Amino acid sequence: MKFMKLGSKPDTFQADGKCIRYVISDLATDVTIIIGEVKFHLHKFPLMSKSNRLQKLVLKASEENSDEIDMVDFPGGPKAFEICAKFCYGMTVTLNAYNVVAARCAAEYLEMTEDVDRGNLIFKIEVFINSSILRSWKDSIIVLQTTKSLLPWSENLKIVGRCIDSIASKTSVDPANVTWSYTYNRKLSAPEIIVKGGMKYQEKIESVPKDWWVEDICELEIFLYKRVMTAVKSKGRMDGAIIGEALKTYAVRWLPDSVDALISDVHSWRNKLLVEKIVCLLPSDKGVSCSCSFLLKLLKVAILVGVDDSAREDLMNRISLKLDEASVKDLLIPARSPQTTIYDVGMVHSIVNQCMINEKCSQDLYLGKNDVGCTDFVLGHGSLLSVGKVIDGYLEEIARDPNLSLASFIDLARSIPEFARPVHDGLYKAIDMYLKEHLSLTKAERKELCSLMDVKKLTMDASMHAAQNDRLPLRVVVQVLFFEQVRASAGVQSLNNNPRDASRSATNTEEEWEKTAAEDCNSIKKQMNQTKIKEGEFPKNGKFFKKDSRNSKSGMQLLPSRSRRIFDKLWVVGKGHGENKSSETSGSSQSPTSMVPGDTKSAASSAKHRRHSIS
Picture: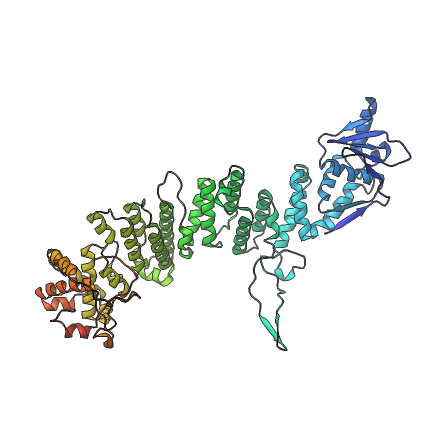
């Protein structure tokens, strides 16, 4: 820390209790200066020789036959006046970053200018501030902190502005040229280990990180912090990612961890103000430089402390631009009254909708007038694929909420376009969870819910799980089994080569086999009830096939018991309508997704056993 000593005489100031200060001298004191609750018994001549204001006040007191001068609004209080008084007496005074602002404001109040005496206190303090304080990184921050209690004097004397400009300028310096002391406690990347003579030595990190300044300015209160960050941004030389990191560090430093502390009456106003200022300071790139996790956490806090709608909407817009980086946990935003759900599903839905609008605008800008498919554009980038994946995970979490309406679930699920969901396993898991937690759904509601899925987009594992899922409507199970048999019969390769024909074939025959399956539903259920699963048929590891199956050597798996019974009926129905149709069909109507092992047969095996039951 920089300091400056003034004067050379010994300090003869003495205290008599807490409220009396006097100077030891052969001459009796002839004036009493009252600063707050403290009385200073001093001599007129030393004071008047340095202070123009004291000259006027002493003259006025003499005319009133009084030896007391009361300065009610003195900046800096008794300590600041004592520094000025000692300077008037020529006593040794030490100025540093902690008291220099108070001394400067007090000297200004006392009018200790060059007009009164050459080399007066104002001049000396200004030299110290400009030549030492403002050239020091940490001293500039300390001085800026002390200015808050000395407003408006420190503001009028340009001390606040000069400190802010000094700090902002230093943050913009090339890290390679940083030679001053700073604080940097955050975890750095692990340095390389150098081995010498069998001993391991950790390589010393000597390079200065780009965000070396972030922690030091976190000690500033929010108004001063905002002014510093505004100045840093105005320089135009600071990367947005570093500004985002600085704001994150400041939020972690000042925002409490617990919800109770956030919304407590004592600190709620401060926390609300803090969040609003941080949102205002976010990089102008709409938050692209900030992590999505940080933005979502900031949004949660913003909702709890009740920030303005504009700040909340700003955060939501920024999040929508980086939604592909979000995690399910971060999206679980607690709902506020009067909402009855556990999480604020409507807000997440709004973010997803905005994300889709942003993607469409980007797509239009990218494609221009070219007639290029939207699917090709999105799959080429992949951001919406990540969005679809995280929203499916979010749907699975909120599906556990008994108060979540079916309409809210379906609307959010449909907000993700089809091309962003090439696989429906995640969606199937969410639908299955909703069916599990909402047993009171009607048949029509379950059918509407399951219509979100497309069984053609289920993986083999998901299809096998769906085939034995009692919670799914029978119609969906039929679709899954039919498509799996079609896929096995036609062969995976032929299905991939001509997916559109397969889809049309499934659609054309769906009414036929679904109608027949509905007629035979009762007999299928009776057969399933009569069938008992033999011990050991379903291993505890969750795989849906027999370990001792006769077909295991050829790599083929058998369907579960219930699915085989249904499938037997289906296969008979298919044969009744013509063997050629069943072998050529390769599609299904929409249906759920999941992540559990599945079952399939090769085309050759299917053809070989065409006239026999699979079981």
